[in-house]
Image 1 (cartoon, helix red, strand yellow):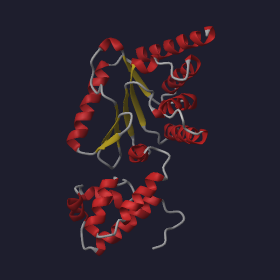
Image 2 (cartoon, rainbow, N blue to C red):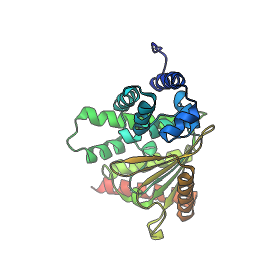
Image 3 (cartoon, rainbow, N blue to C red):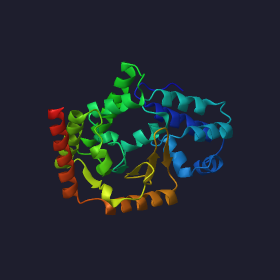
Length: 277
């Protein structure tokens, strides 16, 4: 079957999956059981709404006897993405979310980053990278923030640990600009940002970034990330645990007003440092 010029790659993937499944005489539920996902998820794959993980694609190839077609296709689509392989599906899911809740313990989340901050973070983690590589990563990160504009933008709730405000990523001047940007998003009501003060001490989800995603017609999903890996969590019981952890983070946070005051105060402190440097 020829792929339409207007057809998205993942839609083509889903179309072929449906054809091969039906040729094998399997229902969505039957295929789902054999590859350890629900029949509803198979339906989402076939519609191009959800993107199957690489391990699921390998199992689909085994059940449908497709000679590695789905594994090769997923690898190709992952390689074509500007994002790290473990973040590809999460990045696509956030474009469909109606609500995003994020916790950042050390680094400002990508959706809130300025280009200068994103560049500093990228270079710090890739000191020998080419300028082309750095520019690609920065552009991809800034492009993601487009979902915060327009009538269909998701609700964005962010809990930042105070450490993210006090670390001068890119130097004092760039950090001041970054905090000003966060404050502007708050004032524009594009994001609701709260800060967990250092004085709280131990708190929930201390071991890495946490994101919760809610959708109009899909179950909620959680995503966790450390420096070199990320995990998309679909199991309802695990997602419920993640939601509970985020509730605890909210309780530990300052009020929105106090958080904004702290962000703006930190920005002014960095500006003074930049002027005297």
